[in-house]
Image 1: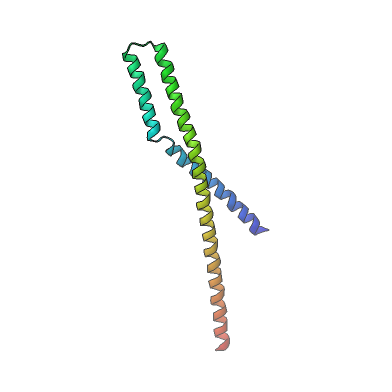
Image 2 (image 1 turned 60 degrees about the vertical axis):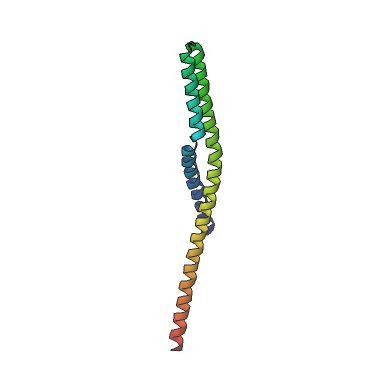
Length: 125
């Protein structure tokens, strides 16, 4: 039962680490070149409207709409990236856990084998 509880704790720890790393990666990757370019286009449109003597009643909603659209695109992209990064991190951390357990098991087997060989040598000498 202790081994099952240990495995469950390791599984929860993997999920927490994966979620944290995926959230960090998604937060960074959300603001890519496309979003920056779109924000630059909104800025240019606002500047052009101001130079063409449009009233602030028209320019302000255009700017607000543009900023809202940039935020929405970044938010959606962040959600999509989070899910893919989360899946990648779960796979990577699970693979590392399995490799660590296999290495520990192999080390234990080697230790037992060495002790058996030593005992056999002592017995036959």
